Length: 363
Ligand code: GDP
Image (cartoon, helix red, strand yellow):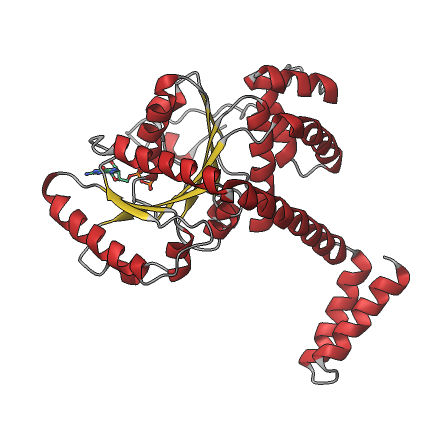
């Protein structure tokens, strides 16, 4: 085809005609069929043997939104339950930049130094909101990720925080059945997710940074109350003094809180994840906590309480989903909402109409 720039008046480059754009998908590619799912019994057997591929596959089913996969996952979890429970579940929280990844890398290696296995799971609400995850977007835990005893799984991403947390709790059961006797559950210390993590771990570790002397202001009281241990990271170089000051402030703040139900008074320590200073001390504190709560019976009390909590959480979540996903209810809700906003109906009357319809018609 003739191109205007090929006219004689143009002395520059010659413009050649282009070539047709090839299709972006190779037409000769034969679609690879996915391997069929193993049976429930095969999966349970693989998990209990500690087979990582089977474990990953089962976790994927737990996280799947497909109802068929969910049903299989529930059966697998049920069958794994008798093999679970035999681990230390530790929650780790801290704001982005507090040093969670760096610390989990060294804490993990410390825990694994005498053998055993460690699963690192995460609950990250941002992965739902932004489709990108704070806890998953960087190369994290370099040493741990190549350790044969470690299983690292990013946060499940779909659904409400309650749903994401439930999946993580179910994943804990699978990991324990696969012989992981240490479970870390990590979360970003920015909101509700700490409560979710707290409801599934035995020990809750809060990682803090020394700042300008007013570090206590930024922390919600609720999070401090949940903590069984507070550790001030980056106590290295010229930051040591500030870290010590922060430690003193946290200690005196904790004195104002009543003793928690565990009977254990939370400890405050400083350490450096990056320079690996004070790691053994942090772990000694965690060991003493486990000795303490196992001796006074609180360990079992808390686990029982958590199991009860999760039973009701699961019921609440399923009811919520069943109700709000119903097409008829969706329509009635829209109508009711319009009437309420138009001041033609009270909120209560509108709610009653929708609920009556739900219960009477057994939708
Ligand atoms: P996360 O966002 O909580 O997972 O934090 P990271 O582990 O990614 O750490 C955030 C930054 O702090 C990184 O640049 C780390 O190298 C740095 N960092 C982590 N731990 C320490 C420490 O103990 N000392 C110092 N000086 N820097 C650290």
